Length: 134
View 1 (cartoon, rainbow, N blue to C red):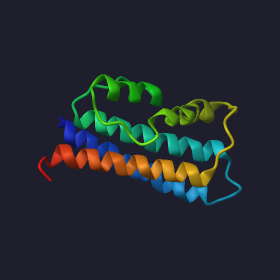
View 2: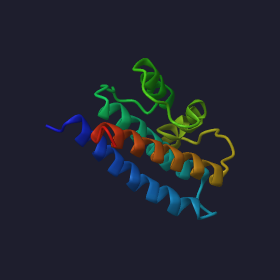
View 3: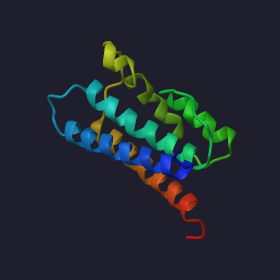
View 4: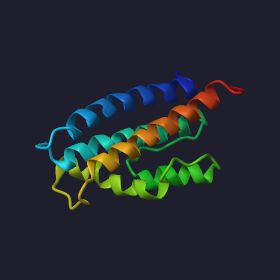
């Protein structure tokens, strides 16, 4: 059985995989925003879940970024940068995979900055929990 820190590290490994795909797709102008948005959403979701896991907060299956932010707030945990704007990525989680969604016009550069900031935030949170005193 994985420890909370092990689970958090696994989630971060998966987030980095999605981050690699996101960057690859974001650089290709012929790729639909919905496909790119899906991977951006997945990176953020896994980062949020990693931070919750390392703090031993149980998370039910959800792709709802607003719910994950709410859990961070409920447990008085640090919020990621731009926490209130992350919900814009939620529709890409499932609907974009199975249906055409009405989404915002994606500014790929801005989404890339947002995703990178969330990854950096999550890595910092994990390092504090995994190595207290550093």
